[in-house]
Length: 86
Image (cartoon, rainbow, N blue to C red):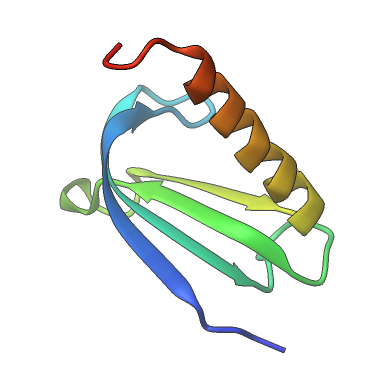
């Protein structure tokens, strides 16, 4: 079953794909759906992109639900460990 639930957010950062240069990312798209490549029935899919640079300026990640949950916890822990305003 597809959820079609997609969350988009503007972001500021950089990404790097295999063998390519770093590029600025401005958009994040997150959705839970069928993956294109991962060996799972459904995954949390994260796309980081700079649409102004065309389709090549994109980094895609497909994570199982368990992996995505652990990643969220790790991100929250890392952010909580940094001093406020840093």
